[in-house]
Structures are given as structure tokens and as C-alpha cells.
Figure 1 (cartoon, rainbow, N blue to C red):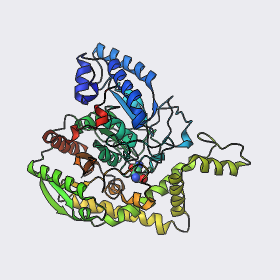
Figure 2: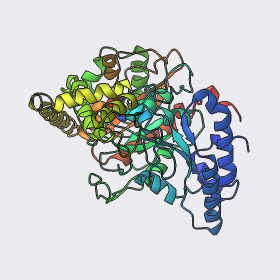
Figure 3: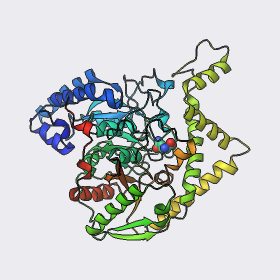
Length: 492
Ligand code: GLN
């Protein structure tokens, strides 16, 4: 079969269970596509071809024996921030270019236990800091819709791999938008779960109170399948929550769009820098949801102006603490011929980290330093609480909140935005992480240059089923999610 890469996760699962094709055939199909097409997209940092085929054979045997998990034998790509035993885990950094983890992240272990086949590890902004994936030590990844554009970031490799049909699904992480924004830039569906829903164990830490892993795929249905595998409490992550996990697939039609109250924050649609095409496509998608029976309700989110400054204090502060472990001593990059221990620390860190990571370590260290702690870090934490309260107040009156995922479509590679320009592009995604809420991106059309536009729906805590269900029904009534970039139509 030449078009295995066009099948949804449900179709792949059915095809494998009914022996229409084997996991080995499917895995070889994807490996062939990667070998041919990824030279142009550059989404993979590491392809684990040999191991993938071994895993595929194991899955085939399990399927034959009749007691395999529904997703057994289906390939996936992991963001290179999830630790994988025996396979390099770089976090997009020179610092970890030689790092092989002695254990699997819980997300990786769960995927393995279900019999999913790992195709490899995909590119990302260095330590997940960025919005373009260009800060990766391994170079930029192309957006499958226009290879001279970025796929977004930081989970840009995950988004590009799925959008070019070089993996049917991928894992991503979202600290301030890194699942939703690349999903938006690449025309995909991506879910950032409630903080605590997916284990962070073995997920290289950027900002621990904000980081959350989640699925990136073509449709809400595909995302639901992966969520069923990766969600759940983990004793190895003290911030993961011991709460029953929904059956996200069974719940795909569980929320009625008819009667749903969708909040439209006044402040969000008047943001300077909101692209006219993005605004128009998002409004059209809301109109569609209205036709399907939802009610649009104008709401206030008064803290909007505080999102960017608050996040860009808290995230760098946590990063400066998390990244202090990379000191050239135990693992990671070590400079040549250090004079003494101070020289070892200094040079290992200045040679091993890229410019954006160093900038954030400096900002964070400054914000946490004794004289400035109250003025910056403590103040930011107080504002963070106000941002959360703003959302909770809104949810008293609406079921979900709609917004663009990003104010623009994908930038050109090398556009060289200043840090502040880049940070402002995160305006619609940051607050969700500051409040710990779940949110989803769904593709809703294209701009004048044929680049994808995304709609974001933000839900109350633990509303992943509801978000997936709303997007699933929208996708039953529209076909934006099934549009494919030309490069995905290429055969290997
Ligand atoms: N673009 C944001 C940042 O650079 C978000 C990144 C993320 O979610 N990992 O911090």
C-alpha cells in the first residue's frame, strides 16, 4: 500500500488488528518516507530505524496473539525533550548533544507499553525556549506548507513531522504555547492538557510549574487516542494529579455543541499585531460553531496586557534554576582543558548553551537575586494568581473560551525577530500555562499565502474531553484538518 500515511489513527488501528497490513510494513513505509522527504523538512534529530523495526515485530506478534493494545504497532515521533533509554536526548542543545538517558520518560514508557513504535526524536527550540525551532543546535526545521517558513516552536519538529506525514502522531510539550502554536503554524490539532494530567517525569525541565506534555496530530480523534495512552497519575512526578483519567476516545461525541457557551474575550481581538487573515479565519470558525448550535458570549479578560511580562519573568526564573544542573561535571557538554573548576563551569555553560538560553538564564537569575526577588519574581507570582482568577470568573459564565492560537501565521526562516517581537507572538498562549488550564488548537483555514491558521479553545480544569469533543464535532462538519501540504502528498 502506498497511502498508509493517509490513514487516521483509528484506521491504522483497525487495519493492523484486521491484518490488512503489519506494523513492520507500516513502520517501513514511514521510514522510507523519512529517508526520502525529511532531507527537505529536517524534522528528525535522530531516526531510530533499526529499533523501530524490532518494536514493530514485537507489536505484530502481540496483535497476532490477540491481546494487543488498540494502538500497538502504530508509529510515533517523540519531541527530543523526552528522555529515551539508549537513544540520544538532546533538547535541541549542544549541551546535550552526547546525552543518552539511562531511563525512559513516563510518556515514552507508556507509549512503549501500549506497543507504539518509536520512529525517532524530533527537533525543537533549544530547551524548548522559542517559537520557531530555529534556536535548535541542529538547525532549523521547515514548515511543510512552505519550506522557507518556520514550523513554529518549540515543538516544531513534532508539528513538521506530522504535517509532512513523516509520523502519524507525535508528542510535544507546552510551557507557554509550544504545542498549540506549532500546531497552528502547521495546520494540526494539538492539545495542551491541564497541568498535572500528563507526567513530567523524564521530560527535560524548562519551567517546571508551566511544562506539560501532550499530543500533536491531524485531528482531535487522533489526539484522543494518544491522550488515552499518555495521561494519568505518576508517582514519579509529584505534580501529576491522582485523578481518574477519562476515556477520551469514548467521549469524542460527549459534549453537545448545541447550547455550548463560547466566551469571546474582547481584549483578544483588538490586539495590535493580530493579522487580518488570522482574525477572519478564526471568526469564520466561530461562526461555524454558532451554526452548529453554540452561543458566542462576549467576555472580559482584563489581565491580557500582563501575560507576556508575567510569563517572561516566571519562565526564565524557573529555567535559570532548572538549567543550573548543566555544569560540565556529571553529564552534557564539557569544555576542553579547563584551568580550574570555575573555568570549567563558565566555559562549559557559555560554549554549551545558545544565545536565547543564555539570555533567559541571565533574566531569570536577575529576577531571583536577593535584591530584586520581591520586585520581580514575587510580584509576577501575584499577577499570575490574578490571571488565573480572571479565567475562573469567566468560566462562571461560559463553557470554553475562544482565541487565535497565534496572532500571525508562520514566519519566514531567518526573519530574525527581536526577542520582544518573538515574545509578543505568544500573547494568546501564555496565560493558559500560567493558570494551568487545558487548551487545544484546531486548524481553521489558510491566510493569503496559503499558510495554516489555528483556532484555540481554552477549557476549565480537566476539560480535555470537552475540548477534544468540540473540535471533533467541528472536524466532522468541516475539512480543514484533512488538508495536506504538497510535500505530504509526495510518495517515497
Ligand atoms: N515561546 C514560548 C517560550 O519561548 C513558549 C515555549 C514553550 O511552550 N516551550 O518560552
